[in-house]
Amino acid sequence: LIVEDDPHVAGLLRSALELEGHADWAIDILSDGHAALLRAEQSAPSLVLLDVRLPDMDGAEVYRRLRATPGNERCHVVFLTASTSLDLSLRGVDGGVLLRKPFDVEQVIALVSALLQEP
Image (cartoon, rainbow, N blue to C red; front, side):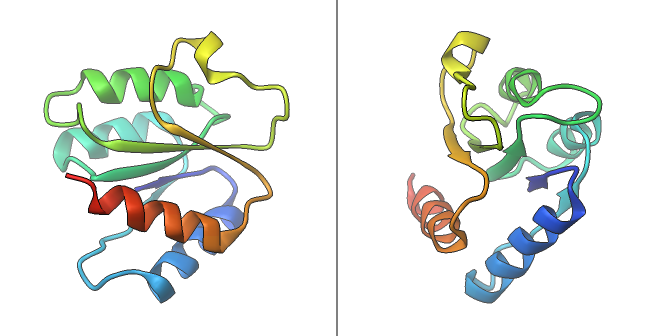
């Protein structure tokens, strides 16, 4: 699941993951936290690429609510941010991986592949 309000970034991530991904990867794009949480309730994603700054709530809040949703406790979360000063540990997030924008697409693919191979 890609949760990103910038359509250019979301499209770039989707294209890269589709080109390098596996046949069993289903990729959805949502642009706000509420929609992401609703989707996570309906079908628990294995991994979420989550923008830290969304129009309706910040990524840390989406993360906390996602983890509190039954079936999503073990969902991998990769935070995406353009901020150079953001410290997620200070915002109450204990987990997840942080990637700074602009990111290397190959790094994102390698990270996603590695996380999805974990039990």
